[in-house]
Length: 184
Image 1 (cartoon, helix red, strand yellow):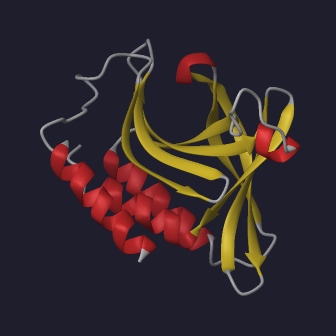
Image 2 (image 1 turned 30 degrees about the vertical axis):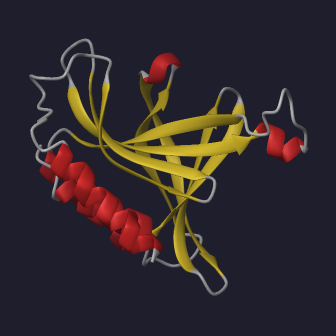
Image 3 (image 1 turned 180 degrees about the vertical axis):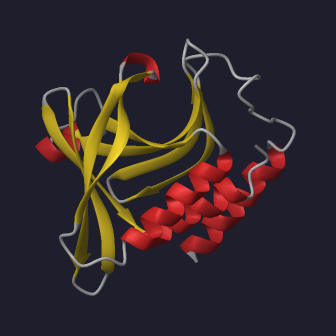
């Protein structure tokens, strides 16, 4: 039922924003243009486009790790029991939609590798105001949970803290489908 609602939400989103077409010429520099997003447990994922000040355009997969500060500490401040801190790394998917889809296909294929297989991906860390920082590399490891199947675990350093985001096959397929049917 949850997946049906997610797919319906995606369809409504794409229909309502079908008149908006974010090409490399149309978007201002330093602004993220979301194409599709999904969250899974304490992870948030987003496929988006971004143009740098020098005009370089690209597609990215945002890998966000949510840390619920108050929930973890078990406290409530002024009636607020949720305060989220999000650390995020953004995988470089490519400069065209076709390259981005090919990279997502590679991630799906990589998920079928043996458990603990490691590879590196070019990425950029998020700086203030959701701007992307300098290029870096992050590690990706194939993992498996009992009765849940394989997933990809991305390890990255953000603000001198080690973070990780777990990407499941269903989330990856959802993001790929959203990118594929987007009007970019």
